Image (cartoon, rainbow, N blue to C red; front, side):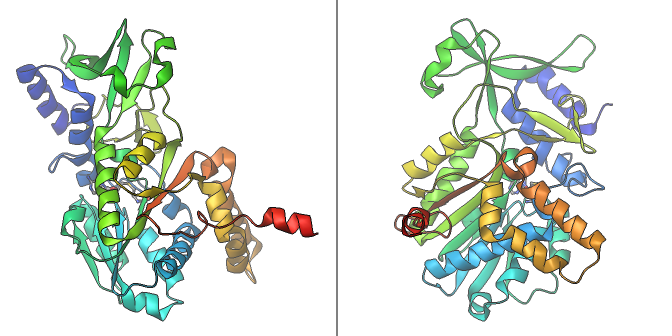
Length: 372
Ligand code: SAH
């Protein structure tokens, strides 16, 4: 099916030649008139995909528990900024605030800032948070958020920041781009760009022709900027997304529509386009900018340590078997290694000297074993 964006991309390619993947991804997702997040109801059972906050209220609540502890470890700054990137339907923030409400001091200190590109989703977030009695403002970027100590949360935000892909062709790694076939359909091709070998993992020479390497300078720039800001104002970031701890080869670029994978070139602007996160590279970007990067944690471990099972038990007590079964299946979906528990990672970093709940706890289990 030809989409309005496909027509514009076609004209652009006819005039200027193949379009690098990063530009294609950027237009498809965030074009102000024909982009995916402008027009589609992306998230939820009636949309294209379901995220952790939409899977269970427990996800946002446990992030709230973590934020409250992190704020305490920061020395309870008041006021302070709680910033969320790409808040979707606003569910994570609504659930988070339900958990932090047990601390009146936190609720007095917190200033909420939602960084959201989609006008449509901004309205959904406003509706969701309408009854909230803490100040909430919306932003296009972090730049307009005032300088105060800050905590940052983001779920499935990094994966929509555009990437570049390079394909091995002999001794070169050539940039993947999009061209037109003789019938005018979008097809893969090579652009003119090549990758400086300095950006490749050490074992690049062992890769065969056709191997793919993903490089995401826009994600690195985002993390560097955020890390610099944490160092300037003090604070911490907790970023949840799917990906790998170490740079690796492979094509993880994907398109999702109506809860199924689809061809990313078929209907530009109508499918969500994402790729896995290379957390190794982003950890280096954060630490180069002066932040202290905490050990990467699996989502399952993180949520269980924060009390996922206890919370499920608490919500289910005195409830019907059907409710208890639903809570069990939500907890399993979030935490089991073959579901979201292992692929999704928690990437945390902070201003130098800031300790964070779970990430900086001294392991006393050995002591206990010795004593028993
Ligand atoms: N965090 C939500 C939504 C994830 S989808 C959840 O877990 O359910 C990605 C979100 O990022 C959407 O809200 C989308 O509109 C937003 N987004 C995409 N590109 C963005 C950008 N450049 N700046 C800010 N928000 C962006």
